[in-house]
Length: 592
Image (cartoon, rainbow, N blue to C red; front, side):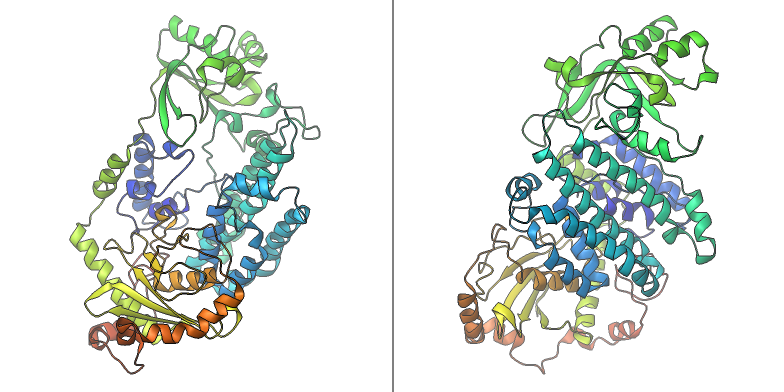
């Protein structure tokens, strides 16, 4: 979701359209984003932000507030943090190594870890990491980094918060007894904390130092979530009157408990019949279901009778006591059956699966009722790709490729002038998209080793991630095989176009020193074998004609390096992160 926000809030987005930004969303619940209605809404936000000239204090931001993806948050945390503080990133990777080795599957992590030796210390470790970042590093990074990096700092903090609460969420799913609401409460508490953080922290991005406090007070947050999260749980049979007992808490209840009267407004959505798009059983595919007509004695059936009487197809019902007659207020304050249909729909067990007793008054401030709904039409992969290539895009493919090649040349020039420690980069003479690299190590299991590999960059770069592979045996990666990491072509949904060759190779250098044998392309040779391979690596590489051609001479120069115009641009210190050209306001990833 953070990448969608990048598209909506930047004049020069790394994505050609809203659909292209949505295409990178994968996995559970993606249908709630990849549909025509959501595209229309986000296109409207994009146009509104453009009308405000993308001024940080005048635009709409879009963020995610859930905590169900440990490994995506972990990957985003590492890449974003490495860009602003590599030493801190390396430190956190060591501390968070207990997440490794579970095939990036949260349920597998919980099953294997919870109850194991030392696992009871993990929540404290995570909480300490979050606290230390907030007390020791947040203000330090805020003072050291430019204004355009403030959102990256918030992204780092939020992803650490996700790790804390997601780990607790999956831990409690394993430990809680049947009928317990503990994992649900953990998740909604995370949502409430996130809403609070957005409100309190966003002013760092939108306000100057003089009006920071005022910015925090005037930030408006609009939350899109299911009725079961939005409606005050205390007005349902699932919730208690307070937070003391182990009842069902939710976002709406927590927000209302901390907001002054009139500072929050909950709008519910209800229907009598129609169709709904929900997950099919067993995977992330979706299915269109026909909704059963709501049962009698339910609030939906009551609203349906109103539609028949008026007649009308839909209405908005205010639920403030002073806007209703006493008789109506009394009726809507009583506990009626209320249907909650979310990401799943189970028509055969609808009463047990989707109905609960609740009062409309107390849950919501108003309800939108639509008598007969029609299901979201989810875009098929081919439709999404078509929309991504055409909708909202002002660039022709050839023009996009021209900018990609220009950026790539700028990256190579920059890396030659400012090389990365223990990393050499050389493109092939005839193909700049074949980026060869050489990783070297002074200590550890790879001491004395030099490892030759390839970044095979797609023609769509930087809009798509590279394919990674190694030629030199290391005992860590299979030679000649694609390497699965969060910044490779195995995970296009995680790729951020503002990342470059430097980001990828620094991440790969770090990943090589971790153990993750279950990742595709990885292996797990003994330390003794790795040291032996390290000692043999130079001799192995020297037999490779291409390696000798690329890395055999330190005095070798390239024709593209002698381009005077590119050299002149490189000399300018104001280099845009996205297009690698100077000038303009350096807003991440680009606003030249």
